[in-house]
Image (cartoon, rainbow, N blue to C red; front, side, top):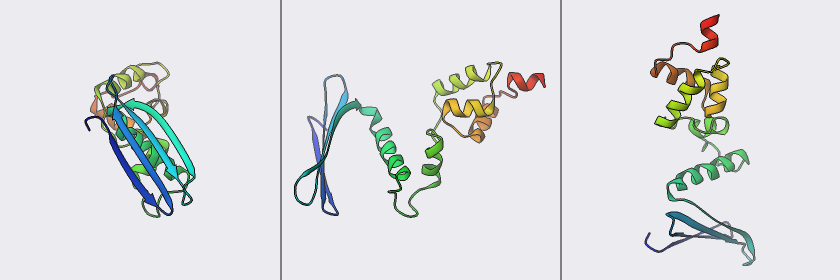
Length: 144
């Protein structure tokens, strides 16, 4: 995409157009316009986000579809279902997330449940990552 991109989609009498262009600071400026069968505007959205976050935006829109009951029957995969309650389910761990887990796990009140909530992961994912990082016990478990 050099100076801009425009795509259109028509489905069930609705026509949507998405325009995107890269701006000077490296972000992506987006504009979405939607029209009904009669040509009247039904939606207008605009904003900008880092180019690297386009996939995250797509995931958010899909989660919104699922939560609003708009996902096609059978379309919600296990991953999508898990991400309804754990936003980072089945995503790879970054070095920053590992460090945050290490720091939070050192707190005296650290629990698997609390770590899962803080890191948007399932309790099973937290237990697995703690093993991988060779963190055998949390501080409050060592006292018991």
